[in-house]
Figure 1: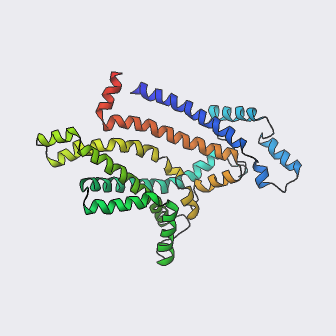
Figure 2: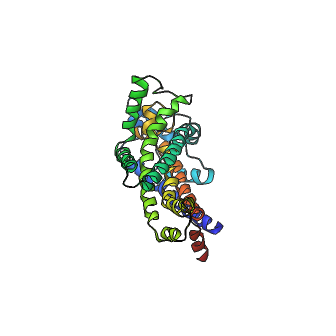
Length: 311
């Protein structure tokens, strides 16, 4: 297992470098630069000083070499071109936890409620409970989260005035954005868990367990649910990356001081360092989640561990 993890880490590092390289050149191919968007009225001499300070006057390949050297050797994500004097790493460190609060709460609600409803729908297949749950699944999958956010703001913030619709600082400020993010996740996890559970219920080993007289609780826990979770593991770990990145629109709607505002501003103002930093941050989370997924496979299904050992 140690060798397997190290091998995957190696692949992950190579993948990260490729992602950073592609992103670096793509964002520089977009017309304009920070001075074009934020310094239109500045004298050309001032623009030239700015470009020289941040190395934007150097050839692109030289800029790439400097950035990769700082990233690989020092873990330096650079300095924001828009927020003068502020490092990208410092901004992520300060505002990332704000996004994580909403994201983790939404993930916890989405996963737990989605899996529970999916299991109920599978065991009540074709009955009224299944039909009601599937109607919600269709709505939750089709309706974007910002629509849910708008409805929640109107109902709980305007109509009844019981929860704040903007601001940050107290737990109550996290409730509406958390629910807005979680509603779509509940529907998605419910849909996949229902399908996975139905497939397992009809599997040969479940029928064999019935023939052997295995009790219903034992059959459900040991044979049905455990095997139903295998496809879900593939979804959960990568989806946790969106703990930080999936709430950008929601953050803007509820005025939450997370990474969302910085990401949107970075794209609009061609803040190369901020865009690259957020891409590196997201890529590390995603690659790490895939490695964790492979490890969890062996925990959920021992047959996977045996197969890897035999190789």
